[in-house]
Image (cartoon, rainbow, N blue to C red; front, top):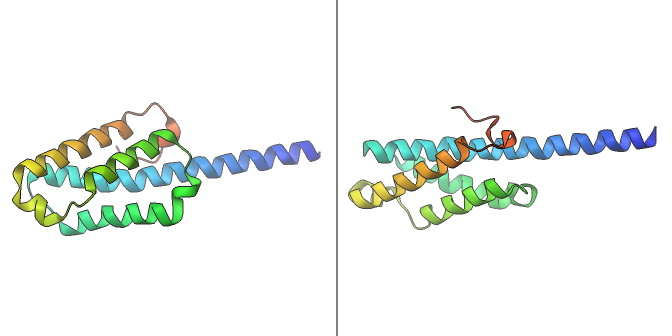
Amino acid sequence: MYKTEVEKFQNEMQEMKDGLVSIVAKEFYQRIEKLKDQCLSGDISSATVTSIDNTLEKFDKVWKGYVAHDELQNAIKSIREFMKGTKADMLKVDDEFREAIGDGMSAIVDQLKNSSDPILTRKLDM
């Protein structure tokens, strides 16, 4: 009976970890897909850039210690590299920079969307 309860608890903990990975992936996916679309159209919203910065900050403060998923960690690292120092005004005035950021976000979106890991993709709106 004890062994069964321990196994049940471990399964519940794994479900919580998997659910967190899905939630975090969805948070980032929605924001970077929106920025990708804005970069392609040339109509950049400051709120979108700020939203990505806020989500990166939230990840560092809330989720970082609990998300042990290599593919998601790599995607977040890439997002962080592309967004470091990026401001909406920069994207609005520099076509080449906007295209580079759009291409980067597109690659990350594709990476998340095409992942073979169902934990990563199960909550994504595709």
